Image: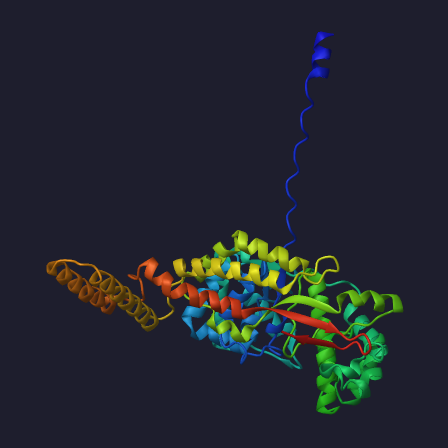
Length: 474
């Protein structure tokens, strides 16, 4: 009885506190690295582009085979040992992931073991059973060598490799493309530059989507007798949209639309946000009712983070970049940046541009500090110049400060000798390794910080509810 009374009088224990809910992870899928859409003139250095995205997103995903099929990127990795080493750093530090086919999905006639050589197996499968555009594709000797080097990197860093999800049993590509073509007036295709020339063949290609036998009849009339499959997918669209059969601008419009639909479905299947821009445009949308049109007024101005790859050339790269990015991504500044970005574009959480700028600037500060601590210059001349400039600056500053003090003559002689020694160390140094952290930070941090601030901006997307056209400005 006394025990029961004591239990009643004892204060109730507090329920265990729930752990704070983790924020959703942001992601970016570099769909624009497809060889048909990659504007290599915009970003001559792919590594800098990857570094920029790694600063902005939790997950940066690239199709593994595009490192080979995209000739510009492949040549950069094959010919530039520094670029390949930096890509290895980004993969090993979890900054970038490679997407490829699950080993169990390959046909049994491959020479390369997809478990041991996943990149080589994917490229071999591409050359044997798939098309690149309208043609068969075969890797060159140097591309096969690059595959082997990437295989070694992946074997050492297995977590960087992720496998694509299974394709749905139904042909969603044909269904979605047919819906857009059949309702092209409500989708306002004629007002979208990339798709505006599709009108002359819209009904014909819609029939290809609805009835697979229709596209075969069309190609047979053009003396084509061999077909890879019955269904109408992207490759079949490429074969039909041939400049031999239709005007070039018409082929370009239907190809752009088909590629955009395919990329959107792939992003949905993988649960990733696609990278749109330049030659690749997001598929069109339409208002199904007046109610949905009115609700869109809440999003007339939508703020989104907009990386500026053209300005990414100033982002510092060099040995140690992967570690610097990994440490930055573990920081509170990176987490705060992600939280602010997650509220952008929501009806209940439109953030002011100054809020975005604040967290972006904090992120730039952290990255600049980490880069100054860890990133080494890419080349010996670059490191030598940086070292010499830093030592000269430090020596001059030291000499000026000492000379302002009323010191005996013998101390001034010591200062003069120190200045000479500093110059000698600058000449003898290699790659900046002897440069002190203090001097290096003083030179490096402002430039690194400014490069990130300039490369990450806010894009405003405005929606004209009268003609459904989207206009983007920065």
